[in-house]
Length: 261
Image (cartoon, rainbow, N blue to C red; front, side, top):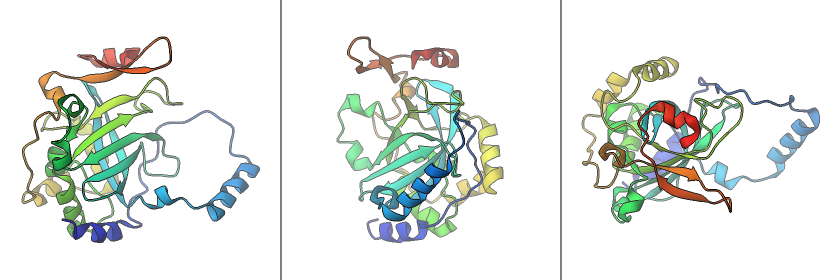
């Protein structure tokens, strides 16, 4: 697979649609002329290596760990760091006004299997997302997209959302939430997929069919812990302003939206 990485990165340059504006409107005065000039000057004079290194755009879906009712589309802008590690910044849209929702770290199956059991609880598999066609790479030619998906299918993701744009429509509120990916048919709200396919002019059923020959390994032990009732979220700790990892079993969307994330 190593030989395919440079080709994929090259093909991904400049790809992507501008058809999913942010659904969040932040308060604030219009950008002043002075700030626009500063922005233009900074763009012309400053280098941005981490941003320039982003070489893939993926569109998929997440849900709050422990709350299947909290689902949303997620636009991933991915940097391929090496053959085993990728990292993504996640937005609620793919236009200039898109709001930064969070981050996802993506590792190979080989690295995932080396993680301690407690750490594995934070990670989700990508097998279903790839094989089902719900994860796409907008703008890529079919052959290039399939090569990229063959690279991703047996990877694992650790995703934190810092702006819960499904409910916080002005500013990022609360603390980060651990997100998961879907693992089987019937879990995702079909309306999300219908809306996505319409905007991108794609057919998930046809994409799924075209990926039948992509080899997906069974999910490694320890991933997708929520399937076994083991859900983890952060909780606020009074005192020093620290954040502690605490296991909280969410059973309804109401619990998630009541501030128990």
